[in-house]
Each structure stands twice: as C-alpha cells, then as structure tokens.
Length: 74
Image (tube, rainbow, N blue to C red):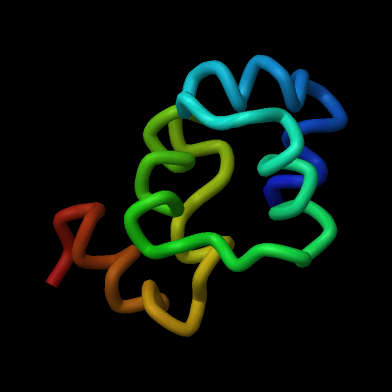
C-alpha cells in the first residue's frame, strides 16, 4: 500500500503524530513535493506495522532483495 492510500484509511495527522512530524510534511510526501529519506521510510514502515513498506516508498534504495532478506529468506 502506498502512503496516500494508507492516509485515506488512516489519518494524516495520526501518522504525523506517530512519526513526530507535522501533518503538512506528510502531505508533502503524499504529493511528492518532499522526498522521503531512507531513515524516514524505515520509520514509516514500522509506524504503519508494515502496511506501507520502505521498499514501496523508496524502491531506488530498498529493492526486492531487501524485502526478501528482511523476511529471512536467502
């Protein structure tokens, strides 16, 4: 699920609170005005209990191999 879809079923404000950022920053991520850092992508994955993965947010950094590795497969 992408971050926009997640925020349609959950609150941008709630996600912002979980991450310690402003709802405005979450809005900027959704619209693509601000790039999500690798560190923040990992925080979003944890805060959404994996509903939004870091690989979905930043496939240029966290590709499919990272997802497989994280699941314990080799």
